[in-house]
Amino acid sequence: MLDVVVVGAGPNGLTAAVELARRGFSVAVFEARSTVGGGARTEELTLPGFRHDPCSAAHPLAINSPAFRALPLERYGLEWLHAELPMAHPFPDGSAAVLARTVGETAASFGPRDAGAYRRLVEPFLPKWDTLARDFMSLPLTALPRDPVTLARFGLTGLPPSTLLMRRFRDEPAKALFSGLVAHVMAPLGGFATGAIGLVFALAAHARGWPLARGGSQSLSDALAAYLRDLGGSVHTDYEVKRLDDLPPARAYVFDTSPTALARIAGFGNHYGGYRYGPGVFKIDYALDGPVPWTAKEARAAGTVQVGASSAEIGTALRAASREGRAPDRPFLITVQPSVVDPTRAPAGQHVFWVYGHVPHGWTGDLTDAIERQLERFAPGFRDRVLARATAGPPELAARNANYIGGDIASGAVSGLQLLLRPRPTLFPYRTPHPAVFICSSATPPGPGVHGMSGHNAAKAVWKRLRQI
Image (cartoon, rainbow, N blue to C red; front, top):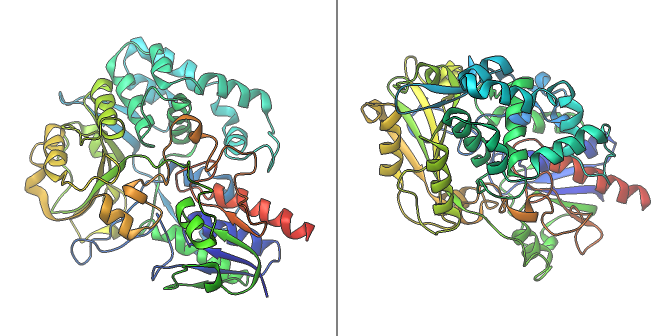
């Protein structure tokens, strides 16, 4: 009999498996797809030689993850690449605000009226970032805060809505860039704790950047899987699990799946009936015959580019997708240009480009024209660079990854109390009605993103259970 079976080989499932194998437990992972990765994969979606990331591409949370930083993933092929700028936010007039590695360069891009306000916002937390990141990405029941005073100060600053935090700023560059940071988790700007979301992304950039993995996000997943095998664990792909009886006997089962799928497989009925899924996304992967012709020079040097003319325009786009049930006319776009820093991603002189906009949950329309009209505002002539495109709306994204119900790449609405208490309001989020069954997906704290901390925290709960047995 195995000690642990993990269902789902996404970053959280693989991290949970590694953590348990490191402690001497026998572990096997079962994955429905033909390759490991979940939201961290790389595939040729358009033309031969163009390697795209179907979901996650830039990794500010991964390089700052306490779980990943404790693992020897570089020995297994993971290499982080940094663009000249982690992120740029261009404006229609050709100017841009930037999220740079240094606080000073970032503050200067906001203009003299907001530079001081930004410094005062982030500088108190930056020297204690590593401890702070560990504290807010863990639960008190899995790891007591190492610096509860700083964590409390961060909570006082970040728990209010981002719209209140942004009152510190007077001009649009700072407001728009910070609004875009919040929108990375598809949360309405006025929602609970959205200020903390923006702060986390900003601090992550100043601490270690927003890198990409050489060769694509698959490199991170492959490194986790290779390390697991060296620890004695096994990985089984093309193995779809429809019920618990499909799995071999084990002392514990850990699911890197949506709560909906777990309830169906394990027979938990309506246990997660109150769990809410959020808006979806419409994603396009492009093969280009040259770099994106951004008007703003800063955008040409950035790994990630946020596209939204103002904080008001970004807020309108988020409301349309999350509350009004319609696709925005001018979608807020998150874009990544991997081949700016990684020439292995496309043939010589050519580029891959990654972009998505928010749409309502389960939306079945086509946002291609709206996305490209928005890109043309900031990069005139973009359409002339397109060699091929691969589009994926909510139905296609859900077909690729069963955790993305309705196209929700966050695996659950990141709003209200569900931002912190997921998948149910409980102090034991990784446990389920069955004492031997656990959940470790992005539907558990600390939530969405490629960081492995949900798997890391769940592994502690499993380890405690197995020790008790």
